[in-house]
Length: 351
Image (cartoon, rainbow, N blue to C red):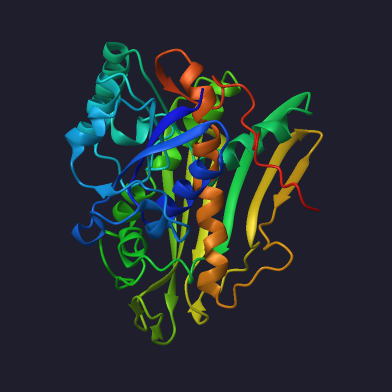
């Protein structure tokens, strides 16, 4: 039988998750939560850009819980711990892309609440996305051919200009004056979920960490940038680097790094890898690069169209994990707890 799924939100990632749920042979869309009042009452398919599905969006939480879904596909920008605990206590699994992998980035108190909710409801929660999430799994797989691992570094290095979410970009420092005294703290808070990724990898490698720390660096716009959805004025942040380090003693053994740029004129003008790079220092040395490219016949013409591919790769790890999550033991589950997550059932019949 298909698993009954409620899709939570229809933002950039939520729309792609909704479409993936509808296409998945083992999943059935039974409900849709819409945060925006203007979306309430609209058909789920219409909101996702596909044919009508006969499922109307609602902001009535009670009505959605009354559907008794097996899982909620939870894709807001940031998690609401109270709401997530409510789902889990009701016995509903949660598969999410909302800044959650292990829960460490939410703080010890919130993580303990989520674990207790899973125990009470006999439910499970899994968090992923492209990075952190799938990129960490790629690092672990790459290290699996070494007989000695000294350090693993996973770097996301991309031009983020087409990610048209001013709220998201500003939360990690973009657009603020380079002299802003709180830039480091802002980026540390905005990228706290990468701390989760460090703990995920440490657990998988049986490493007991002594500390996890964040380091930051910034590039300054050398002229004004009007990006359409936001402005970055000269003298403001146009590039952000964040590095989360998992330490054993004072030695960094796991490093998760991001290098994001917006606009074309900044100092320093860091080079980009335009993808995800894994480096394993050990025996042997490993370098794995993952590039994301559009398929043949791709109709997108703008950078914003291309960024839709980013929404797909963020949504799919969490959607594809739902069948495994349903069979998992209660609790916070990660890639180390689930069978291999693949795109089972999604192979095209065409060439």
